[in-house]
Image 1 (spheres, helix red, strand yellow):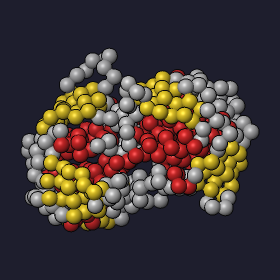
Image 2 (image 1 turned 60 degrees about the vertical axis):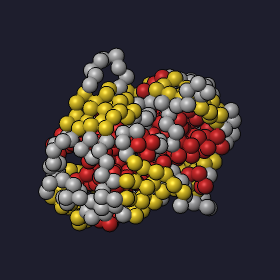
Image 3 (image 1 turned 90 degrees about the vertical axis):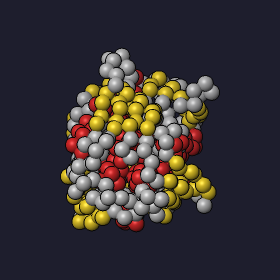
Image 4 (image 1 turned 120 degrees about the horizontal axis):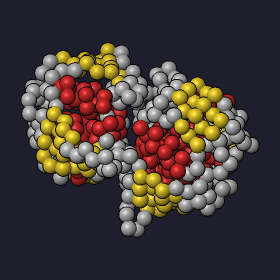
Length: 431
Protein backbone atom coordinates (compact mmCIF):
# COMPACT_ATOMS: atom_id res chain seq x y z
CA UNK A 1 0.00 0.00 0.00
CA UNK A 2 1.37 3.43 -0.98
CA UNK A 3 1.26 6.82 0.66
CA UNK A 4 2.02 10.29 -0.65
CA UNK A 5 4.54 12.52 1.11
CA UNK A 6 3.60 16.13 0.35
CA UNK A 7 5.99 19.00 1.09
CA UNK A 8 4.03 22.14 1.78
CA UNK A 9 4.03 25.84 1.01
CA UNK A 10 4.19 25.31 -2.74
CA UNK A 11 3.15 27.74 -5.45
CA UNK A 12 1.99 25.93 -8.58
CA UNK A 13 2.92 27.32 -11.98
CA UNK A 14 2.89 25.83 -15.46
CA UNK A 15 0.64 23.74 -17.69
CA UNK A 16 -1.39 20.60 -17.03
CA UNK A 17 -3.50 18.49 -19.39
CA UNK A 18 -6.76 17.03 -18.14
CA UNK A 19 -7.41 13.34 -18.82
CA UNK A 20 -10.54 11.86 -20.32
CA UNK A 21 -13.52 11.60 -18.00
CA UNK A 22 -13.54 8.46 -15.84
CA UNK A 23 -17.26 8.83 -15.17
CA UNK A 24 -17.96 9.02 -18.90
CA UNK A 25 -15.64 6.14 -19.81
CA UNK A 26 -17.15 3.52 -17.53
CA UNK A 27 -20.72 3.39 -18.94
CA UNK A 28 -19.39 3.86 -22.49
CA UNK A 29 -17.13 0.82 -22.14
CA UNK A 30 -20.02 -1.15 -20.62
CA UNK A 31 -22.25 -0.21 -23.56
CA UNK A 32 -19.90 -2.12 -25.85
CA UNK A 33 -21.46 -5.30 -24.42
CA UNK A 34 -24.46 -4.57 -26.69
CA UNK A 35 -22.67 -5.12 -30.01
CA UNK A 36 -20.58 -7.89 -31.58
CA UNK A 37 -18.62 -5.39 -33.64
CA UNK A 38 -15.37 -3.73 -32.61
CA UNK A 39 -15.49 -0.31 -30.94
CA UNK A 40 -12.65 2.17 -30.57
CA UNK A 41 -12.70 4.56 -27.62
CA UNK A 42 -10.17 7.40 -27.43
CA UNK A 43 -9.14 9.36 -24.34
CA UNK A 44 -9.48 6.50 -21.86
CA UNK A 45 -7.30 7.28 -18.81
CA UNK A 46 -5.17 4.65 -17.07
CA UNK A 47 -7.01 4.46 -13.77
CA UNK A 48 -7.68 1.71 -11.24
CA UNK A 49 -11.43 1.92 -11.90
CA UNK A 50 -10.84 1.51 -15.66
CA UNK A 51 -8.59 -1.48 -15.01
CA UNK A 52 -11.22 -3.07 -12.75
CA UNK A 53 -14.00 -2.59 -15.28
CA UNK A 54 -11.72 -3.95 -18.02
CA UNK A 55 -11.20 -7.12 -15.96
CA UNK A 56 -14.94 -7.43 -15.47
CA UNK A 57 -15.57 -6.94 -19.19
CA UNK A 58 -12.98 -9.60 -19.91
CA UNK A 59 -14.83 -12.05 -17.67
CA UNK A 60 -18.00 -11.16 -19.56
CA UNK A 61 -16.46 -12.29 -22.84
CA UNK A 62 -15.11 -8.99 -24.16
CA UNK A 63 -11.65 -8.70 -25.67
CA UNK A 64 -10.40 -5.33 -24.46
CA UNK A 65 -6.93 -3.95 -25.04
CA UNK A 66 -5.01 -0.69 -25.26
CA UNK A 67 -3.89 0.42 -28.71
CA UNK A 68 -0.14 -0.05 -29.27
CA UNK A 69 0.22 3.36 -30.91
CA UNK A 70 -1.98 5.31 -28.48
CA UNK A 71 -2.03 4.19 -24.82
CA UNK A 72 -5.25 6.15 -24.23
CA UNK A 73 -7.19 4.37 -26.97
CA UNK A 74 -9.03 1.15 -26.12
CA UNK A 75 -10.32 -1.48 -28.55
CA UNK A 76 -13.25 -3.66 -27.49
CA UNK A 77 -14.99 -6.59 -29.14
CA UNK A 78 -17.32 -9.24 -27.72
CA UNK A 79 -16.00 -12.78 -28.28
CA UNK A 80 -18.30 -14.79 -25.99
CA UNK A 81 -21.95 -13.86 -25.34
CA UNK A 82 -22.64 -16.77 -23.00
CA UNK A 83 -21.31 -15.06 -19.87
CA UNK A 84 -23.48 -12.97 -17.56
CA UNK A 85 -21.89 -13.17 -14.08
CA UNK A 86 -20.32 -10.05 -12.53
CA UNK A 87 -18.36 -11.54 -9.62
CA UNK A 88 -18.38 -10.11 -6.11
CA UNK A 89 -14.57 -9.89 -5.99
CA UNK A 90 -14.64 -7.36 -8.84
CA UNK A 91 -17.94 -5.58 -8.29
CA UNK A 92 -17.36 -4.89 -4.57
CA UNK A 93 -14.37 -2.70 -5.42
CA UNK A 94 -16.19 -0.25 -7.64
CA UNK A 95 -19.78 0.97 -7.61
CA UNK A 96 -19.76 1.92 -11.29
CA UNK A 97 -19.45 -1.77 -12.20
CA UNK A 98 -23.25 -1.81 -11.89
CA UNK A 99 -23.33 -0.11 -15.31
CA UNK A 100 -22.92 -3.50 -17.02
CA UNK A 101 -26.34 -4.57 -15.74
CA UNK A 102 -28.51 -2.77 -18.30
CA UNK A 103 -26.43 -3.77 -21.34
CA UNK A 104 -26.27 -7.42 -20.20
CA UNK A 105 -30.02 -7.74 -19.71
CA UNK A 106 -30.78 -5.94 -22.98
CA UNK A 107 -28.39 -7.95 -25.17
CA UNK A 108 -28.02 -11.33 -23.43
CA UNK A 109 -31.33 -11.51 -21.59
CA UNK A 110 -29.72 -12.25 -18.27
CA UNK A 111 -27.43 -10.73 -15.64
CA UNK A 112 -26.16 -11.98 -12.29
CA UNK A 113 -24.51 -9.13 -10.45
CA UNK A 114 -23.19 -8.70 -6.95
CA UNK A 115 -24.19 -5.65 -4.94
CA UNK A 116 -21.65 -2.92 -5.85
CA UNK A 117 -19.05 -1.35 -3.58
CA UNK A 118 -16.98 1.85 -3.97
CA UNK A 119 -16.23 4.91 -1.85
CA UNK A 120 -17.63 5.25 1.68
CA UNK A 121 -19.63 8.42 1.04
CA UNK A 122 -23.04 7.41 2.33
CA UNK A 123 -26.03 5.32 1.30
CA UNK A 124 -26.33 4.75 -2.45
CA UNK A 125 -29.00 2.13 -3.17
CA UNK A 126 -29.58 0.71 -6.65
CA UNK A 127 -33.37 0.68 -6.40
CA UNK A 128 -33.77 3.08 -9.33
CA UNK A 129 -31.70 0.82 -11.61
CA UNK A 130 -33.80 -2.21 -10.75
CA UNK A 131 -37.16 -0.46 -10.89
CA UNK A 132 -36.35 1.04 -14.27
CA UNK A 133 -35.41 -2.33 -15.74
CA UNK A 134 -38.38 -4.04 -14.04
CA UNK A 135 -40.77 -1.54 -15.62
CA UNK A 136 -39.31 -2.52 -18.99
CA UNK A 137 -40.05 -6.18 -18.37
CA UNK A 138 -37.00 -7.53 -16.54
CA UNK A 139 -37.61 -9.86 -13.62
CA UNK A 140 -35.17 -9.65 -10.74
CA UNK A 141 -34.60 -11.32 -7.41
CA UNK A 142 -31.95 -11.50 -4.72
CA UNK A 143 -30.15 -14.86 -4.76
CA UNK A 144 -27.87 -16.60 -2.28
CA UNK A 145 -24.54 -14.88 -1.86
CA UNK A 146 -26.08 -11.42 -2.18
CA UNK A 147 -26.26 -11.51 -5.98
CA UNK A 148 -29.02 -9.86 -8.00
CA UNK A 149 -30.41 -12.03 -10.77
CA UNK A 150 -32.18 -10.36 -13.70
CA UNK A 151 -33.86 -11.99 -16.71
CA UNK A 152 -35.75 -10.68 -19.74
CA UNK A 153 -36.61 -12.13 -23.15
CA UNK A 154 -36.71 -8.67 -24.70
CA UNK A 155 -37.22 -5.43 -22.84
CA UNK A 156 -40.16 -3.23 -23.81
CA UNK A 157 -40.19 0.54 -23.99
CA UNK A 158 -42.01 2.38 -21.21
CA UNK A 159 -42.40 5.82 -19.69
CA UNK A 160 -40.24 5.84 -16.57
CA UNK A 161 -39.65 8.21 -13.67
CA UNK A 162 -36.11 7.94 -12.30
CA UNK A 163 -36.14 10.65 -9.64
CA UNK A 164 -34.75 9.69 -6.23
CA UNK A 165 -34.74 11.29 -2.76
CA UNK A 166 -31.65 13.35 -3.64
CA UNK A 167 -32.47 14.01 -7.28
CA UNK A 168 -31.65 12.11 -10.44
CA UNK A 169 -29.19 9.20 -10.58
CA UNK A 170 -26.41 9.28 -13.16
CA UNK A 171 -25.69 5.55 -13.13
CA UNK A 172 -29.38 4.60 -13.11
CA UNK A 173 -29.95 6.89 -16.11
CA UNK A 174 -26.97 5.32 -17.88
CA UNK A 175 -28.17 1.79 -17.19
CA UNK A 176 -31.77 2.33 -18.25
CA UNK A 177 -30.89 4.49 -21.25
CA UNK A 178 -28.42 1.90 -22.54
CA UNK A 179 -30.84 -0.98 -22.04
CA UNK A 180 -33.65 0.93 -23.74
CA UNK A 181 -31.64 1.16 -26.96
CA UNK A 182 -32.35 -2.54 -27.62
CA UNK A 183 -35.88 -2.55 -26.17
CA UNK A 184 -38.99 -2.99 -28.27
CA UNK A 185 -40.74 0.36 -28.70
CA UNK A 186 -40.04 3.78 -27.23
CA UNK A 187 -38.77 4.53 -23.75
CA UNK A 188 -39.14 7.93 -22.09
CA UNK A 189 -37.02 8.64 -19.02
CA UNK A 190 -38.41 11.45 -16.88
CA UNK A 191 -36.16 13.03 -14.23
CA UNK A 192 -33.13 11.75 -16.11
CA UNK A 193 -29.67 12.89 -15.06
CA UNK A 194 -28.47 15.86 -17.11
CA UNK A 195 -24.71 15.42 -16.53
CA UNK A 196 -22.30 15.82 -19.48
CA UNK A 197 -21.27 12.20 -18.93
CA UNK A 198 -24.82 11.11 -19.79
CA UNK A 199 -24.74 13.27 -22.92
CA UNK A 200 -21.42 11.67 -23.88
CA UNK A 201 -22.85 8.18 -23.40
CA UNK A 202 -25.91 9.08 -25.49
CA UNK A 203 -23.67 10.44 -28.26
CA UNK A 204 -21.73 7.16 -28.27
CA UNK A 205 -24.90 5.08 -28.33
CA UNK A 206 -26.17 7.09 -31.30
CA UNK A 207 -22.90 6.40 -33.11
CA UNK A 208 -23.63 2.71 -32.50
CA UNK A 209 -26.97 3.12 -34.28
CA UNK A 210 -29.22 3.93 -31.32
CA UNK A 211 -31.93 6.60 -31.46
CA UNK A 212 -31.52 8.68 -28.32
CA UNK A 213 -32.77 12.25 -28.07
CA UNK A 214 -33.17 14.82 -25.30
CA UNK A 215 -29.88 14.00 -23.59
CA UNK A 216 -28.75 16.86 -21.38
CA UNK A 217 -32.36 17.53 -20.34
CA UNK A 218 -34.49 15.84 -17.64
CA UNK A 219 -36.51 14.03 -20.34
CA UNK A 220 -34.70 11.53 -22.56
CA UNK A 221 -36.45 9.60 -25.33
CA UNK A 222 -35.06 6.34 -26.73
CA UNK A 223 -36.53 4.57 -29.76
CA UNK A 224 -35.50 0.93 -29.55
CA UNK A 225 -33.59 -0.68 -32.41
CA UNK A 226 -32.97 -4.36 -33.23
CA UNK A 227 -29.18 -4.19 -33.20
CA UNK A 228 -26.25 -1.92 -32.45
CA UNK A 229 -22.92 -1.74 -34.26
CA UNK A 230 -19.40 -0.79 -33.31
CA UNK A 231 -18.40 2.85 -33.10
CA UNK A 232 -15.42 5.17 -32.67
CA UNK A 233 -15.66 7.84 -30.00
CA UNK A 234 -13.51 10.30 -28.04
CA UNK A 235 -14.44 10.68 -24.39
CA UNK A 236 -15.06 14.18 -22.98
CA UNK A 237 -12.48 15.75 -20.63
CA UNK A 238 -12.81 15.02 -16.91
CA UNK A 239 -14.51 18.08 -15.41
CA UNK A 240 -13.74 16.91 -11.86
CA UNK A 241 -10.03 16.61 -12.56
CA UNK A 242 -10.11 20.02 -14.24
CA UNK A 243 -11.84 21.51 -11.21
CA UNK A 244 -9.32 19.89 -8.88
CA UNK A 245 -6.42 21.53 -10.71
CA UNK A 246 -8.23 24.87 -10.74
CA UNK A 247 -8.66 24.68 -6.97
CA UNK A 248 -5.03 23.60 -6.55
CA UNK A 249 -3.87 26.65 -8.49
CA UNK A 250 -6.03 28.96 -6.39
CA UNK A 251 -5.03 27.43 -3.04
CA UNK A 252 -1.34 27.84 -3.76
CA UNK A 253 -1.75 31.38 -5.16
CA UNK A 254 -0.39 29.96 -8.37
CA UNK A 255 -0.87 30.42 -12.09
CA UNK A 256 -1.78 27.26 -13.97
CA UNK A 257 -2.82 26.72 -17.58
CA UNK A 258 -5.35 23.89 -17.72
CA UNK A 259 -5.55 22.20 -21.12
CA UNK A 260 -8.24 19.86 -22.48
CA UNK A 261 -10.93 21.48 -20.37
CA UNK A 262 -14.59 22.22 -21.17
CA UNK A 263 -15.73 25.21 -19.08
CA UNK A 264 -19.27 24.80 -20.46
CA UNK A 265 -19.48 21.65 -18.32
CA UNK A 266 -18.27 23.53 -15.24
CA UNK A 267 -20.26 26.75 -15.07
CA UNK A 268 -21.35 26.24 -11.45
CA UNK A 269 -17.73 25.54 -10.52
CA UNK A 270 -16.17 28.48 -12.31
CA UNK A 271 -18.90 30.87 -11.13
CA UNK A 272 -18.27 29.97 -7.48
CA UNK A 273 -14.49 30.10 -7.89
CA UNK A 274 -14.77 33.60 -9.36
CA UNK A 275 -16.90 34.65 -6.37
CA UNK A 276 -14.10 33.57 -4.09
CA UNK A 277 -11.64 35.77 -5.96
CA UNK A 278 -10.11 33.41 -8.51
CA UNK A 279 -9.36 34.56 -12.05
CA UNK A 280 -10.32 32.10 -14.80
CA UNK A 281 -9.54 33.17 -18.34
CA UNK A 282 -10.30 31.21 -21.50
CA UNK A 283 -7.24 31.30 -23.76
CA UNK A 284 -8.73 29.85 -26.94
CA UNK A 285 -12.21 30.19 -28.36
CA UNK A 286 -11.97 28.29 -31.65
CA UNK A 287 -15.22 26.62 -32.64
CA UNK A 288 -13.16 23.80 -34.17
CA UNK A 289 -11.22 23.03 -30.98
CA UNK A 290 -12.46 19.84 -29.25
CA UNK A 291 -11.74 21.39 -25.85
CA UNK A 292 -10.57 24.66 -24.35
CA UNK A 293 -7.53 25.91 -22.51
CA UNK A 294 -8.00 28.13 -19.47
CA UNK A 295 -5.61 30.10 -17.27
CA UNK A 296 -6.33 29.96 -13.54
CA UNK A 297 -4.71 32.32 -11.03
CA UNK A 298 -5.32 33.76 -7.58
CA UNK A 299 -3.21 36.56 -6.18
CA UNK A 300 -5.33 37.97 -3.34
CA UNK A 301 -6.92 36.64 -0.16
CA UNK A 302 -9.75 34.24 -0.89
CA UNK A 303 -13.28 35.26 0.07
CA UNK A 304 -15.63 32.99 2.04
CA UNK A 305 -18.48 31.20 0.28
CA UNK A 306 -21.87 29.63 0.96
CA UNK A 307 -22.32 26.77 -1.52
CA UNK A 308 -24.58 23.74 -1.86
CA UNK A 309 -23.85 20.70 -4.00
CA UNK A 310 -26.64 19.65 -6.35
CA UNK A 311 -27.13 17.39 -9.36
CA UNK A 312 -25.88 18.90 -12.61
CA UNK A 313 -25.85 21.74 -13.54
CA UNK A 314 -25.35 22.56 -9.85
CA UNK A 315 -22.04 22.47 -8.01
CA UNK A 316 -20.80 18.84 -8.15
CA UNK A 317 -20.50 16.75 -5.02
CA UNK A 318 -17.26 15.33 -6.45
CA UNK A 319 -15.59 18.74 -5.91
CA UNK A 320 -17.04 19.35 -2.45
CA UNK A 321 -14.01 18.02 -0.54
CA UNK A 322 -11.49 19.98 -2.64
CA UNK A 323 -13.50 23.20 -2.27
CA UNK A 324 -13.79 22.62 1.47
CA UNK A 325 -10.02 22.30 1.75
CA UNK A 326 -9.57 25.62 -0.04
CA UNK A 327 -12.15 27.43 2.09
CA UNK A 328 -10.14 26.48 5.18
CA UNK A 329 -7.84 29.34 4.14
CA UNK A 330 -10.51 31.85 3.14
CA UNK A 331 -10.84 35.18 4.94
CA UNK A 332 -14.03 34.55 6.93
CA UNK A 333 -16.65 31.89 7.54
CA UNK A 334 -17.99 29.61 4.82
CA UNK A 335 -20.78 27.05 4.68
CA UNK A 336 -20.61 23.96 2.48
CA UNK A 337 -23.78 21.84 2.20
CA UNK A 338 -23.94 18.52 0.36
CA UNK A 339 -27.48 17.64 -0.77
CA UNK A 340 -26.32 14.81 -3.02
CA UNK A 341 -24.43 12.76 -0.40
CA UNK A 342 -25.15 14.39 2.98
CA UNK A 343 -22.74 12.03 4.78
CA UNK A 344 -19.77 12.75 2.52
CA UNK A 345 -17.68 14.57 5.11
CA UNK A 346 -15.20 12.02 6.46
CA UNK A 347 -12.37 14.33 5.35
CA UNK A 348 -13.49 16.98 7.88
CA UNK A 349 -11.74 15.25 10.78
CA UNK A 350 -8.54 14.82 8.77
CA UNK A 351 -8.45 18.49 7.75
CA UNK A 352 -8.95 19.29 11.43
CA UNK A 353 -5.70 17.43 12.15
CA UNK A 354 -4.00 19.96 9.89
CA UNK A 355 -5.29 22.94 11.84
CA UNK A 356 -8.52 23.64 9.97
CA UNK A 357 -11.48 24.90 11.99
CA UNK A 358 -14.54 22.99 10.86
CA UNK A 359 -17.87 22.12 12.42
CA UNK A 360 -20.27 19.62 10.87
CA UNK A 361 -23.97 20.33 11.28
CA UNK A 362 -26.13 17.72 9.58
CA UNK A 363 -25.54 17.84 5.80
CA UNK A 364 -23.45 21.01 6.13
CA UNK A 365 -20.03 22.07 7.40
CA UNK A 366 -19.22 25.51 8.79
CA UNK A 367 -15.67 26.51 7.89
CA UNK A 368 -13.85 29.19 9.85
CA UNK A 369 -10.92 30.36 7.77
CA UNK A 370 -7.46 30.12 9.35
CA UNK A 371 -4.18 31.79 8.45
CA UNK A 372 -2.34 28.54 7.81
CA UNK A 373 -2.56 24.76 7.80
CA UNK A 374 0.15 22.50 9.22
CA UNK A 375 1.40 19.21 7.87
CA UNK A 376 0.22 16.03 9.59
CA UNK A 377 -0.32 12.31 8.96
CA UNK A 378 -3.84 11.97 7.47
CA UNK A 379 -5.96 9.12 6.18
CA UNK A 380 -7.93 9.23 2.93
CA UNK A 381 -11.50 7.92 3.19
CA UNK A 382 -12.59 8.13 -0.46
CA UNK A 383 -11.47 9.24 -3.89
CA UNK A 384 -12.23 12.96 -3.69
CA UNK A 385 -11.26 13.24 -0.03
CA UNK A 386 -7.83 11.94 -1.06
CA UNK A 387 -7.44 14.78 -3.53
CA UNK A 388 -8.56 17.33 -0.93
CA UNK A 389 -5.92 16.16 1.53
CA UNK A 390 -3.19 16.31 -1.11
CA UNK A 391 -4.21 19.88 -1.98
CA UNK A 392 -4.22 20.83 1.70
CA UNK A 393 -0.73 19.37 1.97
CA UNK A 394 0.49 21.61 -0.86
CA UNK A 395 -0.20 24.75 1.20
CA UNK A 396 0.45 23.40 4.71
CA UNK A 397 3.51 24.28 6.73
CA UNK A 398 5.79 21.26 6.84
CA UNK A 399 5.16 17.72 5.59
CA UNK A 400 1.85 15.93 5.10
CA UNK A 401 1.60 12.16 4.77
CA UNK A 402 -1.55 11.01 2.97
CA UNK A 403 -2.24 7.34 3.61
CA UNK A 404 -4.56 4.94 1.75
CA UNK A 405 -3.96 6.70 -1.57
CA UNK A 406 -5.32 3.69 -3.46
CA UNK A 407 -8.51 5.75 -3.35
CA UNK A 408 -6.94 8.57 -5.38
CA UNK A 409 -5.62 6.16 -8.01
CA UNK A 410 -9.23 5.24 -8.81
CA UNK A 411 -9.91 8.67 -10.34
CA UNK A 412 -6.66 10.56 -10.96
CA UNK A 413 -3.96 9.31 -13.29
CA UNK A 414 -0.59 9.89 -11.60
CA UNK A 415 -1.79 13.00 -9.80
CA UNK A 416 1.55 13.45 -8.07
CA UNK A 417 3.37 13.49 -11.41
CA UNK A 418 1.04 16.14 -12.82
CA UNK A 419 1.33 18.29 -9.69
CA UNK A 420 5.11 17.85 -9.53
CA UNK A 421 5.33 19.12 -13.11
CA UNK A 422 3.68 22.31 -11.79
CA UNK A 423 6.26 22.72 -9.02
CA UNK A 424 4.83 20.53 -6.24
CA UNK A 425 7.06 18.29 -4.17
CA UNK A 426 5.22 15.02 -3.76
CA UNK A 427 6.75 11.58 -3.36
CA UNK A 428 4.95 8.27 -3.57
CA UNK A 429 6.40 5.68 -1.21
CA UNK A 430 5.39 2.20 -0.09
CA UNK A 431 4.25 1.88 3.51
